[in-house]
Structures are given as C-alpha cells and as structure tokens.
Image 1 (cartoon, rainbow, N blue to C red):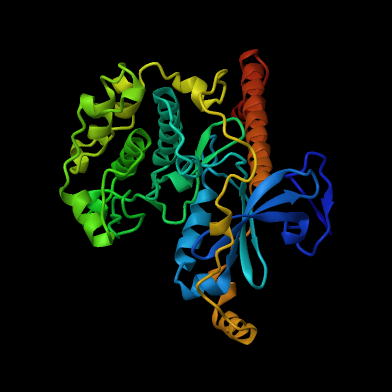
Image 2: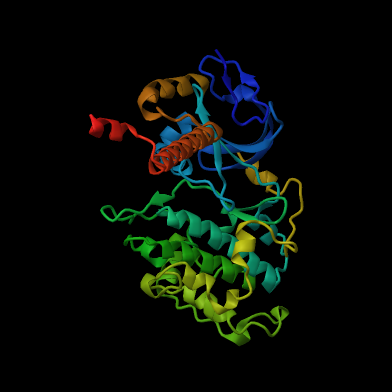
Length: 394
C-alpha cells in the first residue's frame, strides 16, 4: 500500500513497496556541482514541481576514499538541523549503487563564483554576507556543532541574495568527553589549532570567517604558500595586524572598526579570538553596528544589498571534471559485494516532512491533553466530584 508524500501539499499517494520517497519521484535536470565522492544535481519533485539539490554519492567511491563515516556524520547531523541560513536536508534514501541527499536548492550560486569574477563588494554588502554567515553559525553552534569547512565555496546564495552554509561533510558535534583534534578542512581557511591537532572550538569557525572577510576586502587570502606546508607555516606564525591606511580607498572613510574586526577574528590563540566567549561578541562588534539581526534572520529585509544573478552560477568545467577513480563494471560490482550495505547504510532513509507532521501531531496531542487536564481541574474547583473525591468518599 502506498503512503502519503508529506512533501506534497495535496497529499498525492506514492505507490512503491515501502511507501518511501525514492529516485523515481524526481526528475534530474542537470549537474550543478561535485565533490570528492559525490555529484550534485538540480532535480524536481514530480508531485509538486519543487526544485531541490540532490547529492548523489557513489557507495563504491565513498568506500574506496574512506568517506563513509563522514557521509553518515553529515546525514546524522543534518537530520537534527533546520534553519533559514543552512542547506536543509529534506529527504535521504538509497539504491543499490548510490546514496542520495535531497537538499535545499540555491539558484544564486556560491560566493566563490562571484569572487572569481573580480566583483568589487561594498562594505555594506560584506557586512550583510558576514551577518548571514554568523546567523548560520549561531544556529549550528547552539546545537553544539562545529562546521570546520567555512569557505566561499560552501556559502550559497538563494534567489533573493541571502547566504547559506552548505556541506556538512566534516562537521562534528562537540562533546566534553571527546575533543575534536583531527586536521580537517581547507588549507588557507582552517585555524592554527586545527593545524596543530589541538582541541577545536566554535571559534575555529570564526577564524575562517576572518579569512573570508579579509579576502572580500583585499581580493586575496591573508596566508600564502606554494604548498600545504608553507600555507600551514603562514597560519601558525604570521601575525595579521591590518591598519586603517591599508584598507582600499574604495571603501571610503567609514572604516574605523573594520581592521579591528578582521584582526580580532584572525587571532592565532583561540582564547583571544573574537567570538571565543560567545557569538554575541561578534554580533555586538562596532563594525556590525546597524545590523538588524532579527530582520535578517527572518529574511524580512526590504533592501538586500546584493542580488545574485539567476542562472548557471557555477564553474561548468569543475562540474564536468572527470573522477580520478576509474572502474570497469565488473570491478564496481565486486566492490559493491564487499560493502556490508545492510549494516553500514541502515537507517539512512529520512523524510523531514513526515517527521514534521509527526512532531505537529505530538504537539497537538500534548496541547489537547493539557487542555483536558485544565478543564478537569476547573470542574473540580467548581464543586464537582472528581474521581479522587469519589475514592476518598468511599
């Protein structure tokens, strides 16, 4: 028997064996991105024509690159999150060869796409970008999650110009009993403590925000290097201390607080870094004065300072780049047999809308229960005999 598609407004039935969303419910449009083990497609849900981004992950390639743990982490983390400034997970499912994550689609492209075009961003635009990133980080940090890969490629614009955090592949939940101290992230953006394999903190993400802010202002990264080793040495030993007269003249005279903002985010000692004592340190910084945080978070701004172009806002050469793992069909099948799929990928299915409906039903039940109890207590005070009164009377 089919089950209702809770993603569809009109509740059309989905007729398949388990009543679950699967690949047949989507129309593939075209690829819009790729990663180490995945390709990202623009897809359309047939029942209501809504557009999503579909992350298609090869089980074999993920197995060969030892990315399975990260994929499971990403899916697990995303099922616990839902916010205006992140890429939300709507569905996840699998077939014999692939895993699928159905995520929010952002037609504006990523921040790197526009940076590569040499666009000059005004100070008000950069403030807006940073405020969006901070709101996304505020939400995930409140859920004890550190992103660990904040960079322009992982910041996507929706059609209106709001910026969102994407790609939670190396995100981790912070636990007191188990420090995060592995070296993961993108060279040039990760903090000194990541390089030194010391305990990471929410402020490790803020260091990356500082790098992005520097890059948007100066058109280059603060740390240079011909290779990863040289880049790491720069991050560990180079002291960033921007002076007011070093800010490009195009930004005008109202730049008094800008150097301090970037310098404070790029402190090598995480305990001295802006945001270490709480994200409000960043939100209340003088450079971000004037930001109406509530208005931004609720996406109710009337004059958004940057409107992205709508179209193919991605590097087509990168999307079409061939994978570095080439397998013959028989080799692929053999690897599939080696993977204990029943154990490794169990509980991979997820449907946000059915979970939302379940939560709403539970909340309604609780409200009705409270209303019933309240009504009963009111009757008791009016002199009516309750069940307890009857027992006592007997």
